[in-house]
Image 1 (spheres, rainbow, N blue to C red):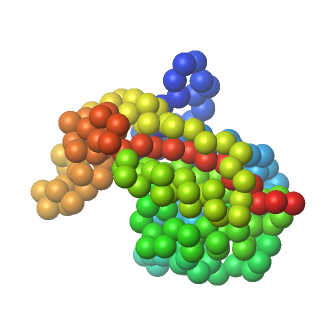
Image 2 (cartoon, one colour; image 1 turned 45 degrees about the vertical axis):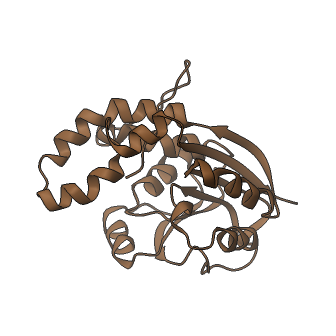
Image 3 (cartoon, helix red, strand yellow; image 1 turned 90 degrees about the vertical axis):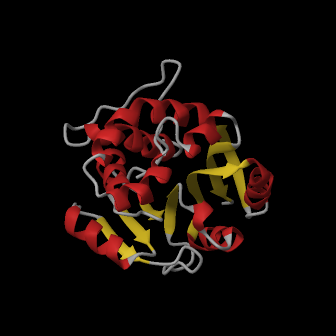
Length: 230
């Protein structure tokens, strides 16, 4: 689950398989992020892959030679490994602040709405720098409340990587939340009340605190492309 992305101003909408269509807006956020670099034929890691749906989409659509989803939760890794099986696709348990990969071993790394959960973002970025090959790219999208935005940008500036692209995608996220609200409400209506109370604040449905924070500009969603020096 992520907050989603709706292309605006005539931007191309990706074609999806029928089984993917219900999750269109979440998938479109992955499409936006992964489009930031040419990862075809490359070794790509997704840090914070969750249940693996986005990792699977990137592998199928963008055709890296190897795609590894990494998550701190062993339960998520187990579920993803059982559900998504493609040649070159795998999932492994790992800590974003102590990645289980060799130096200079990945061509690209993807992080979608995960870094705000980390206790030490600077450590995460230092691990990204260590694991990326020279010239490798970090493709990242995440949100921050206003007081934290400058801190996050400073962390990226001081990461040892060069920021090639930085976009405020809040408007795209707001539109996705609007368009996806009815589907989410219908889906959540089938859940137990205790589960609904736990998930509803995270879903960002229209009228929720999360939605209002984006709409009023108290929370900003950004996407970045960063490159390690050659």
